Length: 247
Image (cartoon, rainbow, N blue to C red; front, top):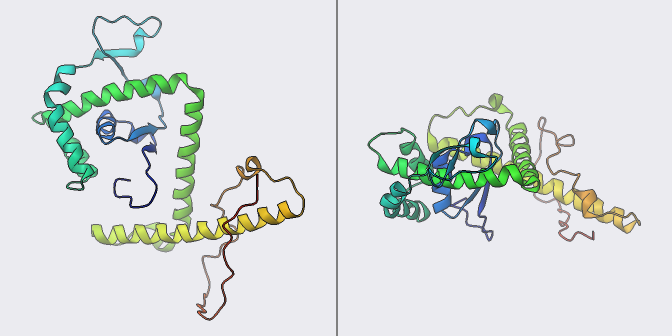
């Protein structure tokens, strides 16, 4: 997302349970990213209160240790420099997380990011368990991501869906080609759906966006992965339909 060069400016990241570590929450917060993972076994996670003496009515048992604010304050400048380096592209977020993932006791920045992450994740968890609409939004967004992954995996059927190359740049290239093919197929599906929706609307059917919400661009039944494909560059391509005539 940090390398995105499109006109969109996303600021929210959805993920699964593996995306909810305190370290990731801390780094994402300084990068201006709102992390919204779908969490399994939320009962196993710890909440952290801002002060040891604070007594919380009804939910005191959820909270564990107090936040070490002095640790965050002491290393805050270095944490900001790290985040700015990631933002500027000097180092990747994955490299930072990999280094911190060793949990080296000598790496004070690791503990500082973890402490900040405890603050941010606790705030998120409190919102997560009290806001039904938020949980619905996270569930829907995560399901969409999983649908796309399944769609891309369906298209990448050669070699059992395994990448034979052991070089990072070759692996990255194959993944990008797979996603490019997936986007081509999605564009084709969306264009076909748009044409059908407009046709039904022209025939007098009451088609609304609520009806459209039940449809997905990830259908594969009509797509053929096997066989002989001929490329005819002289064939006239029907123009794509971008306008959706639905209220």
